[in-house]
Amino acid sequence: MIKFQTKKKLGQHFLINETIAKSISNTFEGRNNILEIGPGMGFLTKYIIKGASNLILVEIDSDCIKYLNKIHRDIKIINEDILKINLNNLFNNKFSVISNLPYNISSQVFFKILESRDKVDHFTFMVQKEVGERICSKPKKKTYGILSVLIQIYFDVQYLFDVDSKEFHPQPRVISCVIKGNRNKRSNIGVSFSFLKNIVKNSFRNRRKTLRNSLKNLNLPEDFTSKKMFSKRAEQLDLDDFIWLSKKIKLLIQ
Image (cartoon, rainbow, N blue to C red; front, top):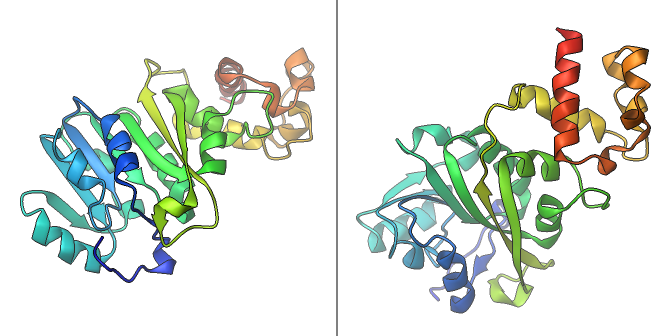
């Protein structure tokens, strides 16, 4: 591996295990339009490029950009903060996303994926183990939360494997994991994504409270909040419960 001064402020922890890089790239077999976020020195890129006909890299570090431009002259490389880019403008058709995500922006990137959910048909991310468990969590677990619900409503997710800190340079203080998601068939669920997100966020605002108390600020009718569901906590509701709840509340406050 080429010596490179990593930048702590960018949350850089570069993968150095070739076997793991190959395993991650294998999740993208047969996919053409691929966006790689934060390729760094291209450790994953060299495997992804073998099967992709249309690959775009987005990298914020100008030093990494200089290196990538030397070894990947035929790839489109964008020197920009991924959080400032409209993903819908990158490809004409549906695309997949892959990344060894910096820990400090992982949640924000997932929300960007959700904003582009009708164009993103697949993602494979290496994230902090805690984040991966939260994304893939099922109801009635402590790890089940806002991102669990929102991501799983639109993507079928799978927790693939753990990655030890020794497989990175520099070594992070946490264990990482690899997760993937495939876009499911849900499109129009009856409310806008922003409305759904607001209801889910309010529901989980205080995990110990019942739904009746968590949603009190919405001033919902008592005959509606008297339903059995409102005696549950948010973590006890499944995906269909949240979709039903959002649609009913939308009708009540129109």
